[in-house]
Length: 248
Image (tube, rainbow, N blue to C red; front, side):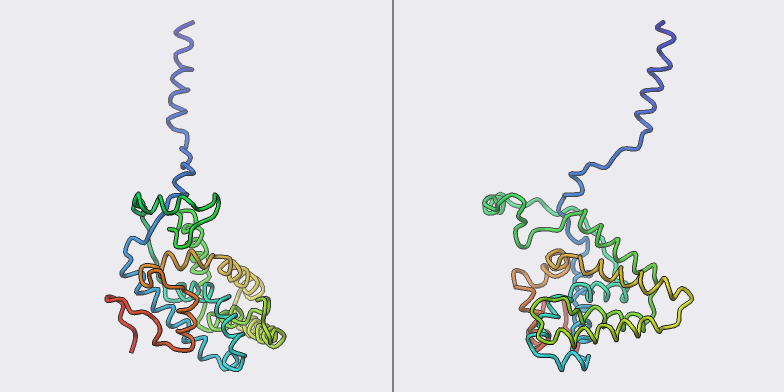
């Protein structure tokens, strides 16, 4: 009987060793930061500057009330910025963030459960979802014209609450989408709806994640929304880090 049971025991041990090990969920919740923050933040800041420059140069955008301009910028800067990362082929890697100090733990201990404190480090899972969105766009290999019209479709979002010229903005979005559909492409029928769905996925990326990952090392505790408004109306308001020269 003992000799007959040995192969079964050996099989059990080997099968447990060869079985794919599932990744610990706690690893996905670990805080991460950029592996090369100086290089990545410099590239990201230049992409943001180019994004704001694009917005400012759209004639129809400049004709909108100032309040609508601010609302649109606040609602669309994240997907527009991420689309800029795609076009500029900006890649990045992350690593596990250093453990917070004991003082920081004490200060954050008063936060209610489930509430993420402002300025919290991004998690590995959140960054991997973001990288998945970017990879999907890279596989599309969009043309410069597609990037331009897609930016217009993202910028003129009539669903943002509080817009005074919502109907006019909706017409601008339809015009941008129509121009996108009229571009010649072998996979035309499937490509445009798929592209718009991917653009919607960029819009679901939290602004807090993008700010913490790409801009917090540059701007510190400054409010991102206020800096964006200054960039839109007064470009000189963008803070300059010692290793981040502003374009002349």
